[in-house]
Image 1 (cartoon, rainbow, N blue to C red):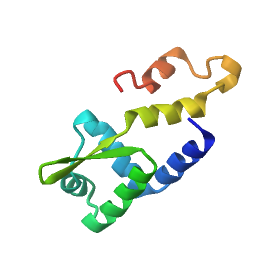
Image 2: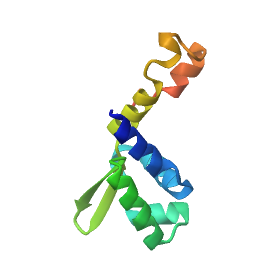
Image 3: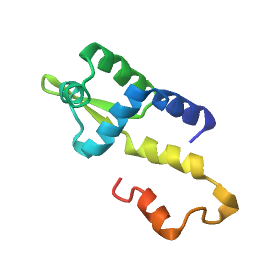
Image 4: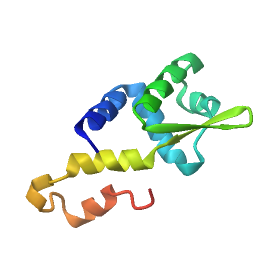
Length: 111
């Protein structure tokens, strides 16, 4: 991941509602969620949610797919893992920073 992509991703997540939307999509996994389900789950008005989803799409943190009359939004696990890798690249000069149990819990092996 390039520095400009990391900055764009971090900027998109640096807003409470967008962070909540992204986390909800991560929890939903590959099946994703419709805007209606997201709005209900987070208590966010549809117009506000639309704005936040557009920002996350622009940062490539989520994808959008049409399924009949519905739009399905999914977290981009590849982009998320790329951002995490960028942030931790060369961490502690190649030495483990956290105890092994913490490091294992922090990784997303299923993503």
